[in-house]
Length: 113
Image (tube, rainbow, N blue to C red; front, side, top):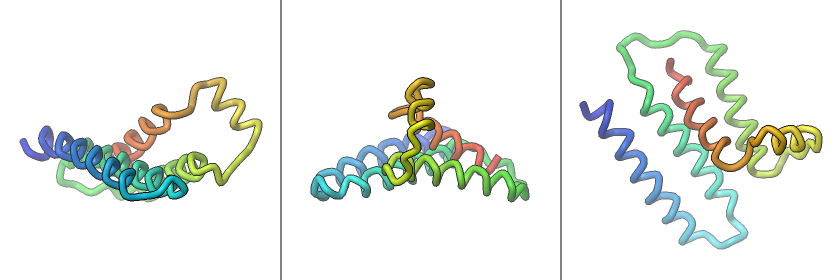
């Protein structure tokens, strides 16, 4: 019961606490630390949602693709990649803010599925 219901809830509380703590101790020019911490914590939250059924997934190609997607959105959110056509497409589709956070959670969920 702990792994199914209480562990993700505990991770949400830890996520909120850690992000607030990092925001309070870092100056404004270190916002990249908050973005990186948010990415890893949301990814870990997605991992905690995937219920492990005992057997390990051996699909390494899907894990590599998921890792590249997470790294791409992390670098995109840190503004290290600036492709105007892709930015226009993401703005048109609505890929900003919380949608990227949901993608982090979904990638964490799919990582061990």
